[in-house]
Image 1: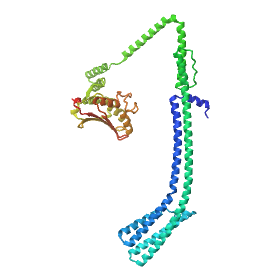
Image 2: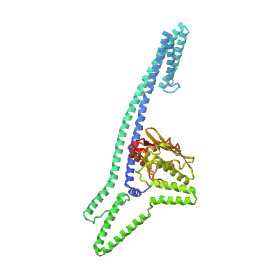
Image 3: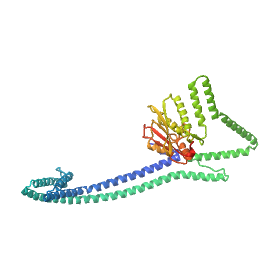
Image 4: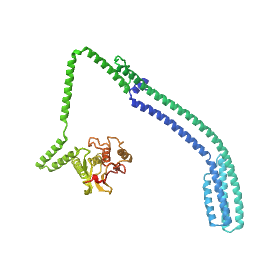
Length: 505
């Protein structure tokens, strides 16, 4: 068993956020537990109340079904119509189904034995009714009259038994109902008291935790006020805790100590002021020197792709055709990437950038990406914001097909859909759930995942950035959509380009 001092030490070492989360979680679980217990108890009691009168309802339904049998028999005897005969058969089946709810076993219970008697009498009654119907159909007047009288007599006996059992059950159920109602009220009272105690305990815990947080802050606030008035001799009581308040208190105390030491040194060493200034100047010189070296270490993007072009020319002179094509693609890719994101471009240039990007990836990954295009060439000069297609393809590679074991396919299509043009990127990769698609489109998904595009292999332009620039450029929303049938079903990203004259060629 842990010692109380150990528990207190661990509590003091927790951050304020974790303390608040823990205390509110405990309070929430406690209150939810009380409510769940209340809900279960009340539902159990309500179920018991409902079951009390089921037997009475069954007996009432039995009487109704038996009455239907008797009435349909009488109607057939009067009319001998096929409709009345059909009505009799339906009533007979309904009554037999109602009888199935009765007890048929021999038990040591008066009410259950009464049910067995009603069942046996009812079967006898139904047999007599059937004989009556058959005699009527056979035109045997003497027999069907005899059977009819016997059926009426048996009907009265069964009805009397059912009424007697129904009354007995009602009296018994009424006693059970009163007991259950009293228990329900008792449970409601107990639950209300428990819920009130839970609320009071929760308030007490929250007050204790917040007081533990606020009191040291008030002390620090008073000390800071004295320091602001020039009193550096304030004593700050150290707190034996490693949360934010403990760190703040220790830092404040250290700051006060540093201020006192600084003031003392300043008063004692005015003669060293020039040396101090010299050290400060030297420090500034070192900082400027570090800044200069940092600037010199930065790579100029223009120098980068110009160097790549020079490398491509050198590879061409040496006859390395594949290397030449690769470096040309790299140079084109970097040249396109350094343009400003607010510049116009065309669908054709965006597609060529994707071609370069896929080529570079296939050199890197030994041609494992199967890339297909279906492009309406008449749309290649349509103006669009720059860098809207390549980030989508990059996400398809990084988060769709990179880690799948089957053939990796990316398809890019560009079609004229009448009032707009559609740029579509489809992959046969991991797919996305509906929840993930919603998070990506509304920008709430983890920035290290699909929607951010800021991973180590990304260009830093994510789907949210593309959506925002499309909306600003065309003045319309919902220009990008994502479709997927779920896990391992692939993903399709659709960009809708409005067919506006001022954005065309």
